[in-house]
Length: 184
Image (cartoon, rainbow, N blue to C red; front, side, top):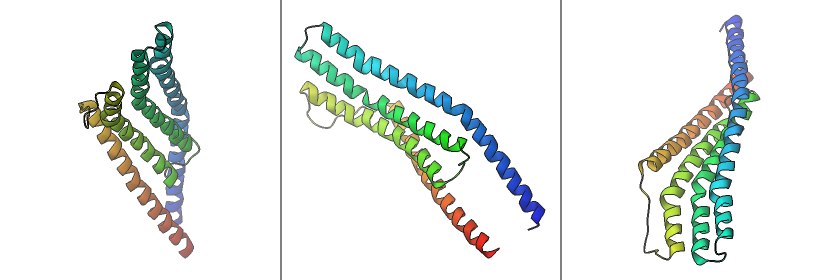
């Protein structure tokens, strides 16, 4: 390979890394805003509002305690999705530092996928069964088989698997480059 061709490729790569870092720097605050807004909405809807309602009604009523417990359980999937936003924010932070492709960035993408998958599992399997147990009507496995949860689970699983593939490719490419650099 001619030296100028290698220099040109290195220059193109550096320019693309700089552009990716700049774009990630612009997107990271947006991810932070979404995360903050999501946490405030979750806090208000599932925690503060139900506690206030229980406090101002007949405090200690068993029905109010069950309603509080159901609200806390229902907060699970949105909290897990907020974890996905947190990991997205971390991923954008890595990109902003110029870490475009590496094992750590691929792992963060996998965590975003994991969050989607776990949120779907929580919504489909865990939450319905915990709600039934709290209400005293647990008579076997219950699940909420809804299209949106299935799509969320599919997206999460596929993103996690794609991230593993990318991570493996990046690790192999780094090893090959290291071998190539030793030869030259």
